[in-house]
Length: 386
Ligand code: NAI
Image (cartoon, rainbow, N blue to C red):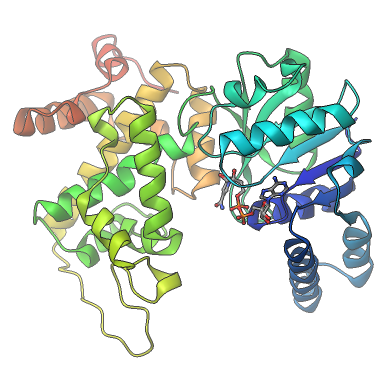
């Protein structure tokens, strides 16, 4: 039973994960090399919990309980008695490996050592340990206390016991677990790529402007935010970097190719909400374009983005990245998609999916539009995902 949890890095993710574990009743030690980061994390938690009390979501007793469950520590050695440690420091393999090595010299042999990395391979991080079988990826989404999904990623070195304990612990913390293979982007950051990439491509071809594409995905598809609104929300710098990292990690598979439009926006400092301007203007009183609300155009745009998403999800299943249920849960609970993509494929019909992909390929003759072999096989065998 995991009772004592050590978190390394008290930034956005580490402090959120600490809150989740403390709320679930664990004794948490939160460590950061930067004492200001620890102070900020403590002050932020006070503010977040005070707001929850104000809204009547928790009482003062609960607020105090969560706060006393977290100790802010300034030495990695203080994490020595942890049953589980989760690292959420800077996304740099060399630095992470050094921290893991030092940590292993303090903790007991049974302590699980996890990383919250979004883009590094768990196998490479695990290789820094004397006991790599205790290493695993536990990937939360931002903001960790609100997002239901956690991807759990066993490396090829990870033991079954480490996997089972990690899965059970994350479930005990009230989260939905999706188990993913140790491959670039895991589930969400891989399967979601076409939501941005195909929307950008549609824009670059001059089929529609940002506002119209967002309108199509929201009204025809039921997505809470359009792709351009979402990229502005995430930050064009951050979103572009994820795409570029996934593209490189897949040996430049054209399916993940980044778009110049987004690169230029990031280079120009048009980062989105955080810089006041992205695809939209966020300064007070600014006028933004109105969408061309044409039904036929809206359906065309939505169908094209949807089929690319379905194709990506089907291919992830084809390559055993995760189970169908976990792929669907990942997208509905990690990025709030209105439906699971494989369930959506069943609803649209597998034949429709293959036809749409083949039509795109016939039009462009680009490898980007190749239909997943799984969809083709399912069509032949008249099968559905569920
Ligand atoms: P952040 O920049 O907000 O926080 C990182 C913290 O780690 C900083 O407080 C820094 O002082 C500390 N740190 C740096 N080196 C350290 C060391 N050697 N020892 C102890 N502390 C150290 O970063 P963020 O966004 O919280 O990301 C952390 C990790 O989580 C990264 O691996 C990132 O890829 C991953 N991640 C980030 C998500 C996001 O949306 N921000 C989502 C999911 C995963």
